Amino acid sequence: MSEKRKKLLLVNPVNRESAGLVNDPSTSFMPLGLGIIATLTPDHWDIEFIDESFEQFSVSRVDLVGLTSFTSNAPRAYEIASICRENGIYTVMGGVHASMLPEEAKGYVDTVIAGEAELIWPVFLCDFEAGNPGQFYQGSATPVELIPQVRRDIFKYPYVNDLVQTSRGCPMGCDFCSVTQLCGKQYRERNIEDVLDEMEQTTRPLLFIVDDHLVNNNKQGRERAIRLFKGMVDRGIKKLWLGQASMNFADDEEVLYWAARSGCTLILLGVEAETTEALTDVKKRLNLKRGVDSYENAFKRIHKHGIAILGAMIFGMESDGRKELMDRRDFIIKSGIDAIQASILTPLPGTGLFNRMKNENRIVLNHFPDDWKYYHFMHATTGTSKMTRDELQETMEEVWWSMYNKDNIRKMMFRTIWKTRNLKAAYWVYGANHNYGRVVLENMINDGPDGLNRNLEWNSGKRSIFLKLTDFILIILYAISWNKMVDRFRGRY
Image (cartoon, rainbow, N blue to C red; front, side, top):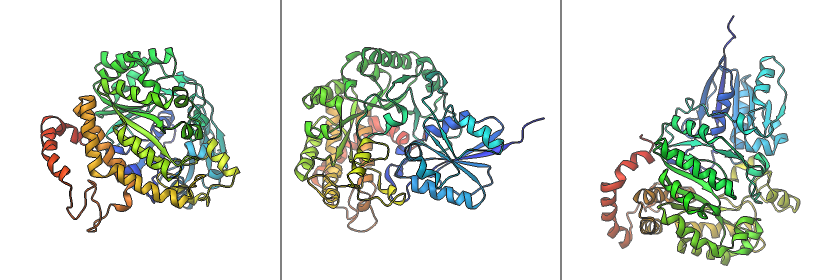
């Protein structure tokens, strides 16, 4: 006798107060964790998936709704859970926010699953089917051989990137990051052949390797990275890919050579700041050990292999005042960074930063859970020793405009061409800076005569001589190289 079929709806909620990176298909990323949940769910369950980046949640006839969320979209996750419970639908929530604040999440959903789900999701489902689900389940670090491949058929939306994870855990323990708290300090590496098998199953032209620390900071880590990149080449996995790495990514020429050969076009580096004082504020130990004077040579080595740099920079450290913010802006513009991720230091729950600021009663936006919607790195949630929260926000709006105005991002694109000799990298950089610009300049984008359009140009038609003179160069670049990439970045693959 066959088991009665049940229906599970998985939901990726979106912050309704700020569009953020979901404003463009090229920066709407599939929630990999929900793909793993789908893999772990028995065959007698039918699975549906809603990503609010593309489609707003609506109630349907299901047995169970599973939610994930980061901190900034937790209020929306709770709102969806409330709608479900009003309609008699059982809710379960996991993800980083619920893992860091399970007691809060328990007040809004029926069951909370904290930590990694691989070992505990099957236990919860058995209890649910038996009619006796618990309110809280604590997952533990999953042995690497039990981390499954992602079930990708649920990802029905036009994502530009496929996501793959090759390892878990991060030994860095940075003060502002919850990854070490969630996944532990131990660096758990998946079998390279299994990773390559999964990469071969991806269908999208762009790939995002989501490891928080792509190349471990030792000889074995570098050797593993080379095996991975060589394997991609040997199997003919022809993807342009983006990864996340620490500054040690630049240390080994062979790593860089095979990364480039395998399709690495853009690498996100955790630079964070250009001064020892600011790095000390956030306990960025690796960069402190290497020294800020090492940045220039690291950037040059990466560029030499045709790889562009997406620099992750943080503003609003404890020692930051207006001068320090402007100096950091100037460093970014003049450095070898090609695309800019410029965020405000945000005390996320579960981090050392949050715990310290909470104990010092310094978190101003603290009407939780509603105020979590501001914790998306573009809204000042606290001040520094030299600036109030409002002063920090006002200064950052000036900083963002000076970096993401159309003239500057076009100049940065030309510099990328010069440094990397890679037109594909330059296009990716140009698109990335536009997307980050749309995020931080969101309040300036409107249909009014004094507003910006989505191309970050004035609706009034006001343009600089530089933009007018370089338009014809872009026409040539589109004709000889970029026309095919346009469709990739817009999700038409």
